[in-house]
Length: 142
Length: 471
Image (cartoon, rainbow over all chains, first blue to last red; front, side, top):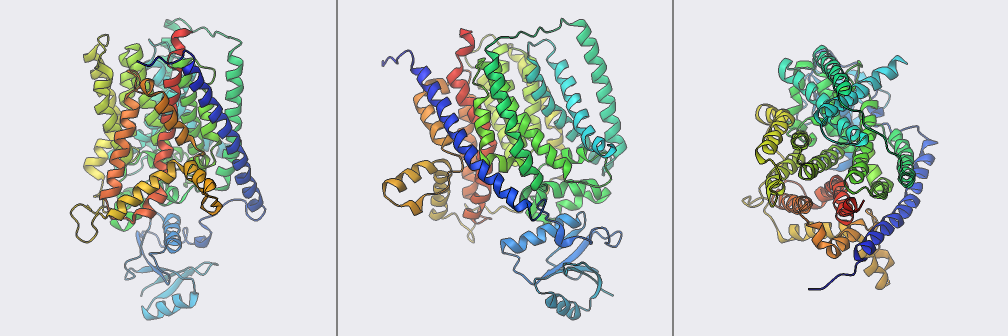
């Protein structure tokens, strides 16, 4: 059987601590860059606000509404468009946004081009109930 | 001032309740204050989350009076019992040694690293995508929806994984309990507090087991990792998985070391709470439970088997009662699953296997890939080493220290890690619902994030395990 030198464990310990210390220094250099990037962005905005596009809607929804239809002129299989739907869902929870069905009494129109929203509203006989400053429209059916 | 109190009081009460509880459980054990602090806090937060969840079980909605009343009764009862116990027992003596200075210095460095973490967390108050679209969304439903809270299980919300357990949402609801509207502050503070608890437990768990002055080094390294900081302030549930995983292992190792059923009881509780975090936590808890029997009793005649098992199961039942209720009475079917083994539409392909293995290689061994790129003079192929080579060092240490890594005291961790990863790889393979490259891209680093503190604990303990005996 091979006999290991007495200080073998000591060597391993030293290797481990040295590796972690070296990695920590490299991490700190990287971390400094990450933080300074945020410092730069902070000159434009104080924090990342995921709710802004839907501001003004959450407190003005008709009482007792549990489901809203959701219409978008974008492709809901794409990550960015899904993100917008998820953000709307988060802001308006506990109301559920049904993106598969716009036959609900209230429908949320979230379009990249607002003209598409008005066109769809006309098609589905929906009138505007609420519109926020970012062009998001809550429509209501008669 | 009142707003501050409304935000922080639930945290303080929750922490103190856990601390008082752990003091009572471990009253006969010789356990240091930091261990009581770091285990007690997690226990307290888990307890508060469970009380909140029970409000939904009993009243089918959030009943603030019930949650506050139960919390106050528990708090007062545990406080009184603690005073009685403190008066009866001898007080622990604080022994100071000069060599602790170096440890104190490393601990201060560790605390300093929370400054960039808090700064980043403040900039991203909503956390990462999965935090607000899944965990905090559920918390909002639970807090605001009254008796419609189960609408969050609607299949239309499949992106928020409605079948996942509710520990984190329940915990966040508890932290909002004194407020009228859900704020971003509660989940944000929760993520920072749990990062502190997780790494604090890593430091003082290692200190307790090895007495090494270097026991803060792994935690400093982990906390300095930009990727770790990002995942920590992202408010993901994986942070809780990491904490309860480490706490469970620590308690099981202490059970073996001390022969005290109190530790097996605590281990059981932590395993139970772990199972309520998310499905990966449930899998981990089941695996650890299965492994704990051979771990505790194989080649160990000293342990009082019946008592240890009895206490482990009592703890497990208490910790997992919410998981059982949720799984059997509330959890909807997982609709994001297609069995690729039998599906003709989306079968398993050879490419899927290749992609999984490639992702694991690149995630774990980026420095090796980068080294090859440098040797071949191909700088364009160099990719960002997110984990800074820690997995390469880990593998080297395992190979060079193989016998000690699988020693009697420790083998449960590597065997668990192997089985856990094997099952997760198998799940990646057979569940063909998601496009595999996207799925791995958004989840694999989080799985590694949740096991990293346990891996560091294991490697460090394997190297320093004889340290304690030589003191």
